[in-house]
Length: 131
Image (cartoon, rainbow, N blue to C red):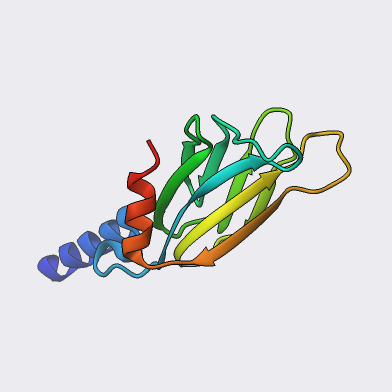
């Protein structure tokens, strides 16, 4: 009885601490590489904050970024930068190339994104090309 109870407690602790993926990877992943530009001037926006699920990075001086991982709450992809209207969209599993146009605060338009599905190899190439 004690052995059975200790196994049950061990499994419960693993699930509590590691989630359902402790035993089998169960969450799909999203990987996105792209560029963030000013929606008016079309110039790159360096140091913009890029969030995917609970992961976060910043754009390079060229405006490029690469970020990815297993899905988790919140199920969102978001970009923000000081002086610009932020963008938040639903994250979808897979490999993507993104162009994000952030509109300056006070401008008439909204920030937008354009995603295209790509292969894992293409994502690797794009992420290596972004310092």
